[in-house]
Image (cartoon, rainbow, N blue to C red; front, side, top):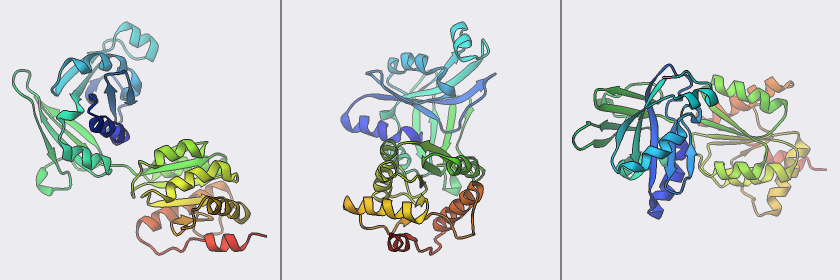
Length: 308
């Protein structure tokens, strides 16, 4: 749901209908990602996905048929079984609703990547009732832990809790080492080979999230750094030797980006790291320390001074 929030809010502000679907439960199907959702516009636009996209086409067909939230049950047909490799007659149940039917407070919380909850009473006959619930409220009685959706009778309870995103820009062995290491921390790593593509995603990140740029080409790294330093991202790191870091700093300076107080470069705690796995450990340790409020001085001034 967090991945589609900005697109949904853009449609709502424009007065364009947008429908949202998310998984409630399923039978004989694996791969459900808690909190995943699909946004569908009347013009055929789609953002996000559920169950690997196996039901996206059929959800797009049923979404505009009603103007109120409801439960929709879909069964895997022969064609879907062949194309997606799913078992025939497997079943999935979804909440399908116009985004406008969900409380404004809910979308505000999701946009800001904060915990959010919904309680939906969806009787077959009668008016649906949807209310926002704060998962951090001890009196709410919602499930603890991460994101989840639970159903009992006509009532569906959905709890969303954001997972820190680690956006990686670049490639090579350090990026390859950072991905599994970040997953061990419960973070969601995403890799972009191009800084320009990454910048669009960075704009939607929050203080919970981290951006690490790995690369020696300022034309690749620079746009991502510009976006990250202008955003509310909680940690911005640049991995590279002092010459590479200095080149990126100069690239930023030529473009008017002079406040580098949020940039950690070269990224990573000074633990004498050598191999890529050790560099990944040093970078993630620094990101954790910054998130915990530890006072770590970025090394950018030293990198600039090292320019020959």
